[in-house]
Length: 204
Image (cartoon, rainbow, N blue to C red):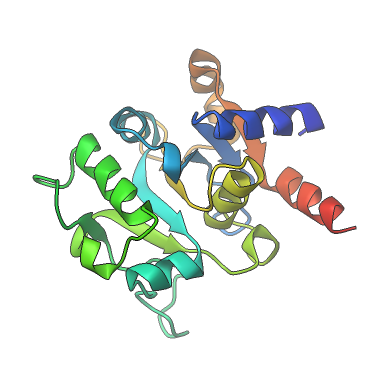
């Protein structure tokens, strides 16, 4: 990815738009839709459910997880998938069934509020938190960490909503499979390798 393409993705994240994250090294090239959590709306959740079709997850920092009383479902090494899931959540108030696009957007908004605590969420629910590694994508080159780093770099907070993309046949999509989706919705693409390169350059 060239620098202009990566900058376009950052600008899209800053503007509250959805972007595509590619280059996840831990999931064999799976790709994800991503939006900064502070910008999530029912329309964005519905777009992810319609065009992503995967699990809609909330990527959070360890600090936010602690604030919300969230811990890893499987913190050990036995029978470990490597997916950093916490228990699923729902807003304690303001939702009906919890699974509608509006309800899931509300749950994200409640969880991301400045003073949010464990009292503001219930479990189980229909939003699936992922707890990122403290060092972000430089610690773990996956969509969860990449999404948080992108939000930070874009000045859009430190949490993100992500959803993996499935093809029409139910198999996981690769970037070459979604050219029509990218074109139809003018989606910018942020590749994890380019993100790592940008972060490493900033360290020098």
